[in-house]
Image (cartoon, rainbow, N blue to C red):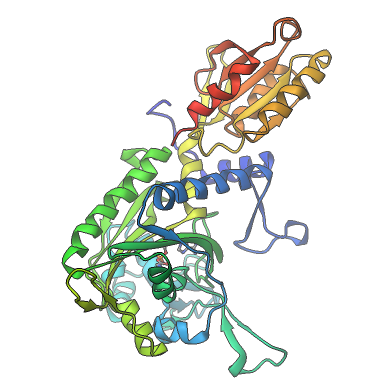
Length: 460
Ligand code: GAP
């Protein structure tokens, strides 16, 4: 990939996603439903592959990490224990003129072009900044704000047939609580020794005040979260280790070093000992891609207090009984999909002056691994045989519509690493042409050699 390729704009990416079947606006035939997105046939493969790559790296290849899949709807006491009912919330302000709602910290960060870290400010400091710097409403251009108030972004629903406060349940705003409440179950059944981790991938829901920027901030999204339970004395080393592991994972997937940076938090939650994001240079600027948090004993202690169950661990060697510290690593699957799409996109000018759009995905996450293209209709039957053989191992796309050049372009746009062309010679000698997406070089291989050749590129 050319290091100097131009950054993609969000509009171009959204248009490509729609035209090539990656991602469509949610409920589109009803005029859409703001900040919801539906993954199409190509996009669902991409996101599933990203989730698989995370699971492989952080569960399959990590002997002391155990995967779970907890329920989305949890006992409402969970959200009291976690602090979400009482204090989860963003600092919101309403414009009294046009009635639009904004996050005060986001307004300040946009106004200062990212130079002021609003997350470190109190509500009073943010109100003062907004007044002194004459921060106006981005919608109507007037400065006439309400005071900052906390807005609880948990979606509420009800269980049972009567809608009453007693039946109130929440759609989870983060997946990690399912990991905390299963600490004892997993530790016991896996006979796990501290340090060990619990991981899961699943949907979360937040009634965000300022959703937007495509997949960046949506009201329904998937999180890939991991909690490592450890002794306090090991916790800072494990925190540093996960910062590096998290960075290596996204670099291995294809995000470039120069588009990534650590952002250590100045302002910490009262229970936290350290927290950091990894930021990515999205089309709208540097923004959080994932978080690594040292949460001390807060979560397990709170669940112990609210559930009445001892969330303790007994060291089998020393007999010491303690509530483990938690290091959390959390990354949004949709946000990562967005980042990887931004990085992969290239408009390349070819030697003949034509332009091609190509998505340079790592083959392990590419939606389709191989496009199977008969050169002419006469080779369709043979090409379908190749498709039947390869599709037992990989996601394959079969395409016989249009010129071979157009078909190559279509595969480039969805990031298919290999195109296999079945031509007249194939019928005689069982060889095919294999075209590489990035170099566009072509080689001739036996049909029987294809699977091993493709397999090798998928290693991650
Ligand atoms: N359990 C900790 C937690 O949820 P967070 O920083 O609020 O921490 C973790 O979220 C990650 O989840 C973020 O770094 C981001 O990748 C993703 N995420 C959070 N809110 C999101 C939203 N509204 N839309 C898409 N992804 C989101």
